[in-house]
Structure formats: structure tokens, C-alpha cells
Image 1 (cartoon, rainbow, N blue to C red):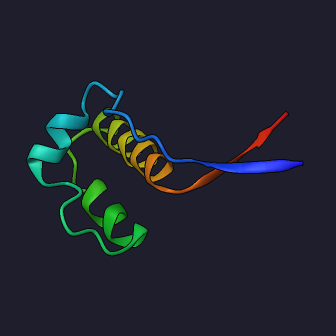
Image 2 (cartoon, rainbow, N blue to C red; image 1 turned 90 degrees about the horizontal axis):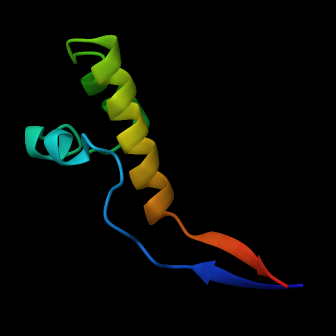
Length: 70
């Protein structure tokens, strides 16, 4: 079986991604623990959930993922 890295990074899909970036939520993050401490300070459960979704999307978009070729 052959594998090739998936290297295309697209624009964020989450509707609140730009707002969280402008707010500085992800600026200079060094760890997931640091993200958690910033996330818990957001005002609503919805905001915290949206921020986690944006974080997860960015994490997955920037980590190499091997995809199988048929």
C-alpha cells in the first residue's frame, strides 16, 4: 500500500474562526493547556465550544495526515 502526505491547507471553514483569531485567542499558544486556560475565560459555553472547534480544525489542518492511495 502506498501513502502520500496530504499537504493542502485551506481557509478556515468555521464561521467564528476569524473573530477568534482577531481576538488573539490563539496568539503564541505553546500548549493545549494554555489554550484551555484561555478558552475557559470565554463568556459562554457556546463560545467555548466554537473556540474548541476552531482549534481542532486548525490543528488538523496543520498536522501531516497520511492518506492511502488505492
